[in-house]
Length: 290
Ligand SMILES: CSC[C@H]1O[C@H](OP(=O)(O)O)[C@H](O)[C@@H]1O
Ligand SMILES: Nc1ncnc2[nH]cnc12
Image 1 (cartoon, rainbow, N blue to C red):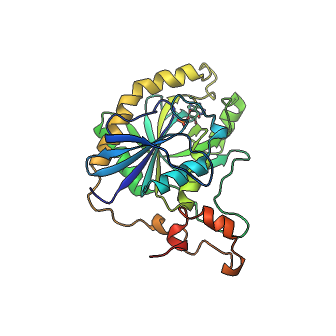
Image 2: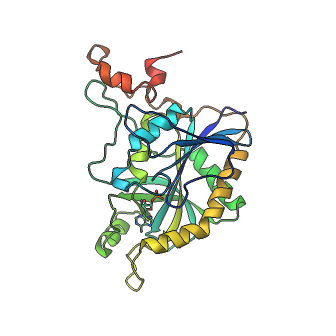
Image 3: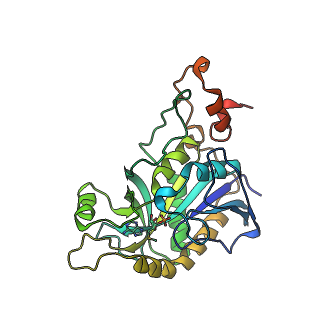
C-alpha cells in the first residue's frame, strides 16, 4: 500500500463504488453528529479508499440537512489524507454543456445558515480559502476523466446555493453575472470544512443541465439531472479507478496538510476543553503532536 488514503464523496447518482477491493461498509462515529452513511472502506490498486455517499444510500438527505461537519470529520477519522468529491452541477456557461466534466477551482458560497466551521468560542481559527481546492488532485482528476473516456474542462467557479428548489431564471442569470460557471447545492460548506480539517480537497463536477438562464431552454428538473448522471456515471466510476491507480506510490506533503498552522488565534489559557475534545481528529495534528 502507498501512503495515500483517498476519501471519495459520491454525489447524486453515485451511491457505491464497484472498483473497491475487499470493500466493507463501516460505521464511523463522529462527535459532530451522524455522517450521511457508513463509509465503504477498501482499496483500489495501491491506494486505500474511503467512499461516502453524500446524500446516503437511497439519496435520503436534503442538501440543507447534510451534516458536512460529521462527513468530513468521519473521513478524517477513517484515515483520509485527501478528498476527491464528485457532484452533479448545472451549467452557467456556454463552454460547459451537459455531459462535460469540469474541475472546480473557486467557490461562491450563497448557502444560508449551514454550520460551516468546526471552530467556535474557545478555539477561534481562520484558515485561508483564497485557493479553495488542491491543484494537484484537481489536475490528476481531469487527466483521469480523459483517460476514462470523458471530456473534462479545468477550472470553474461553483456557486453553492441553498436549494432544494432549483434557481429562478433571474437567480440563474444573477449567478452568471457574479462570474459563476456552475451551480450546485453541496460544494459549500464541504470545501471549507475539508480545509479546516487539513484535507486537500478537489471537486469533480459533472454537468447535468443548463440550469435556467437560457430563455429558450426548458428549465431544469430532477429527471433531466438523473438521466444525464446515469449517462456519465460509468465514466465517473472509471475515472475514480484511474485516478487512484495513477497516483504515485509516494505522497509528497501538501501545504494544505498544515492549513491550521498559524490559523488558531485563541490563547491556550482560553481554550474551551469541550470543543477541544470534539476537535481531536480535525485538529489532532496540533492538539496531539508526535
Ligand atoms: C438531484 S439534483 C440536485 C442535487 O444534485 C446535486 O447534488 P450533489 O452535489 O451531491 O451531486 C446538487 O447539489 C443537489 O443536491
Ligand atoms: N441546475 C442545478 N442547480 C443546482 N444544483 C444542481 N445539481 C445539478 N443540476 C443543478
